[in-house]
Length: 133
Image (cartoon, rainbow, N blue to C red):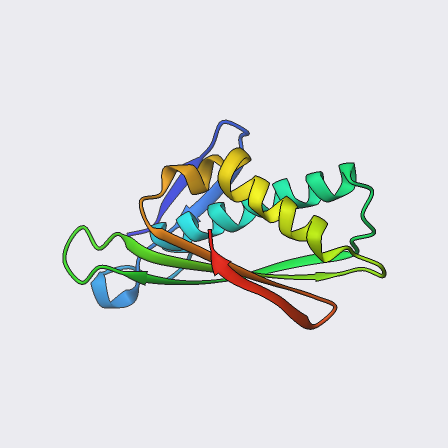
């Protein structure tokens, strides 16, 4: 049941379903790609914004947890993004501002989703914030 999707950029992504529904599990599932897109969109924004702020960010990782409706179309109802940043001297207020700008102004993926979005972040292993988007 696998499919190959070719985007505007020309990159190919193999998409599949779980074996339990007839797939071969040879690629990410469509709803996983939605979350990957959201995480990628906000991460790109955050890195760009922090670079413009001249913040000394070294790494950014995002962990995403989501809940889906039980009934079809089984859309996402809640999505939580947890950002883990490293960098000596990162300003937590600027990191918070970068996340806010991404979530509310720049990220077209977050603007396209009809789910409750929340986020939290930590800098150098210290949890700073947990809040609704």
